[in-house]
Length: 185
Image (cartoon, rainbow, N blue to C red; front, top):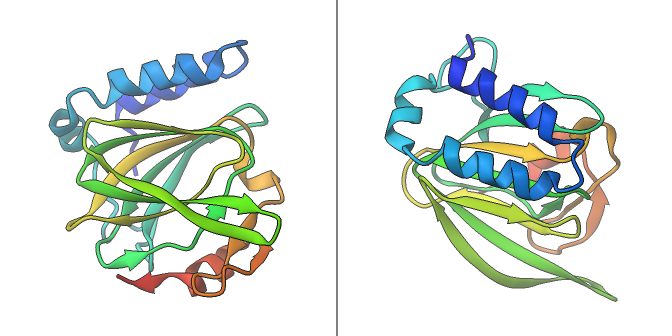
């Protein structure tokens, strides 16, 4: 996928902001600017459906636009009809939607595991910031949901957790388990 200039500029700005003392707030502000005109951004960013470099699987598709030790930036297309399993990131996450609606479901840690907490729908043009301790799972409201996810760290190099969708048993994160735990909504 050829990355549109608007995303290249966003990646550069995130890389610069990621090392600032107020990185989370700075990147959240830049994300609000990025998704302020969601239809324009959606028109500029090619969908990943049937794209060679990011095959659409059970979740949809994703492309890592950049990753180093300070920031990971991922373009995410989530297909309708799939509920992803609860998982953590162990770092702040900033999510900006530019097409569709991403259902955010949240959990809280307890001494015995995790328990469901309030959720919300994240609509095109909206931004969500999830803290370091956040545990969430996403689905779509009706149609494909497209967004940019920014993580303040190297997402692929951290040992994180995934939770079984029915038993909520905690396990080490792996892509294979993640895909296996996806459920039809």
